[in-house]
Image (cartoon, rainbow, N blue to C red; front, side, top):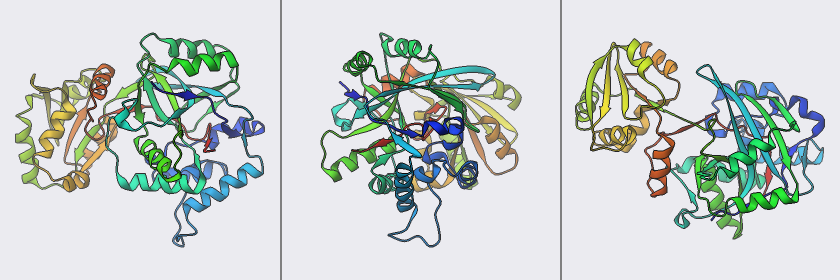
Amino acid sequence: MAKVFPFRGIMFNESMKNQLGDFLCPPFDVVDEDSKNYLYSLSEYNVIRLENGKISDKDNGEENKYSRAADLFNDWLNNRTLIQIERPCFFVLEESFDIQGVNRKRRSLISSVNLYDYKEKVILPHEKTRKKQRNDRLKLMKATNANFSPIMSAIEDKDSKLIDFLAEETSSPPEFQGFIPNMHEFKMWIIDDAEKISFLTKLFEDENIYIADGHHRYETALEYRELINKENSSRMMNLISMNDEGLLLLGYNRAFSGLSYEKLELIKNELNEYFIFSNTTWENSFYESNYYDEDKIIMVDNDNSSILRLKESFNSTYEALHAAIESILSPEEIINHIKYEHDSKEMKAKLDSNNLQLCFFMNALSKNYFIDTVSRGKLLPPKSTLFYPKLPTGLVIQYLE
């Protein structure tokens, strides 16, 4: 189904590879102002300047963060800070990270993937996007004619061809490696062998591609394709096997802030339609909450904790909780009063400091549930998935030739 190709990626000059980790950043949508200042301080070559640069009070229609990104991108190309590889290649990325005291590795294939409308059912989304973020990414793409950050995507890989290929490729010494501050370790390999390229371009012919992270960037690419009227447009993606134990699908906690007492009580009452309640203590609930029991939520309200067990007539804790909330709150209230946080300790700390009112500690959806639901064309509630960790931006850049 999917057409996947090598491409002439743009990378930092090999003479700078020992500092490569300092040049990388997370995707645009997880970088707040404090993080942005930190990334700016790491290096004058940190790609946050391209991906999501600082805003100035003097910005206008001609001079702004998008025009500065375009100018800087061209400067780095002209002075060979960035170099475009001479021939089309695939790239292999291996990331090493620790979670809950366990070291994991995740391997992905950086590729150029043809764009497909969702109705073609080749590339499958799982969440809605917002116009503001799409407009932001479109302005950057129009100014730079480039993709700085890859879309994280996954395939079922039922015959394990992708995961086996990546395991074999990563058994040799890498061409690049480093550590991304506040993120994780990485290693990179470049694939330019004709036989391997032929194997990889055929590997995905019978696969659907599931967008794991990067819906705004993908939909922006579709819109950009219409603007430039180019049928065979493509987008850089990191393709990962669903069989990869390093592809973690974590829970996304949610909490209320600034909501009236009456609305909170209405929501609690509505939850009885979807869940069976049982009392617990915070100490027990925190340790009982894990990444695999997807039919359970821990609800914490100041000093009171409850286990919410999904009733059999409902499919998902996320869908049930979202339905209960939607029956009480307007879309505007949901946007203004619900906060999302994947770190359970951070959320509990905010609750203890009275910054939050009512917290729901969510467990992860299973990969099988994710595949089954998305394959049927169903969208998940907002912030239902956290594919961890986020991919780094800046290892490879795609110029839209």
